[in-house]
Image 1: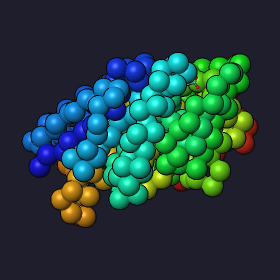
Image 2: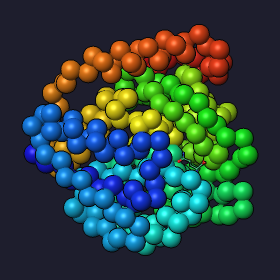
Image 3: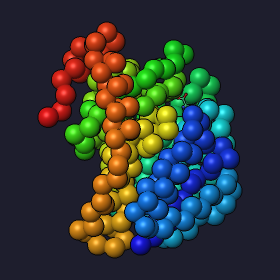
Image 4: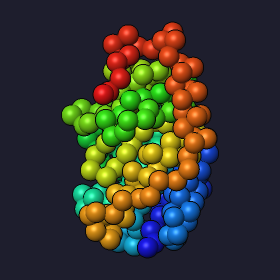
Length: 252
Ligand code: GLN
């Protein structure tokens, strides 16, 4: 079995090791005897979404996002169809914002792809912190690092998780990211997937099921080290010093 992974605009969107997400997808497929093909699409390249099983849109500065915005307008219809047809997407930070309707920066309005019904507005105080989430998708918490000036309002969308420690979409709502069909959109860098192999396997499984049939289940890998690191960071923040009061409860 083989998955083709499209890395959108790595020349512009690649903050805090977001490329590590691609390596994680590839390695975890290869370790299970499967094949991964990675296609980087640089700004201006045309993109045939019908060839892709997974799409990664990483994070970037406001300036880079403004540049990407122009290219996105050319592909947004195809990208939207891919998502509506249950295509798998991981969008991180700037990439998360760009899936929405717009990102209003200090002095510009950056138009998004309009795939998610969300909007983002810049505020001068950046939200920078390690972050721990409880996601309804997983028993294990999701851990990462956030650094954004944008505040994302997700309307009626389902959040990726509830903030256990950290700031999340707006710093106030107590929620982080969006889950929509087979899209996970999140502020979590780090990179996200090597720190959270359960999130990686969830996306891989969705992509494999879509391509090869509904009942594919990935075999487990020896992730003891990753689980240990996850427990360490979750325990470190369970002193609740910075935890938003109303978000301490775990999903059960
Ligand atoms: N430029 C965006 C913001 O500051 C996204 C940053 C990022 O991708 N880390 O909100």
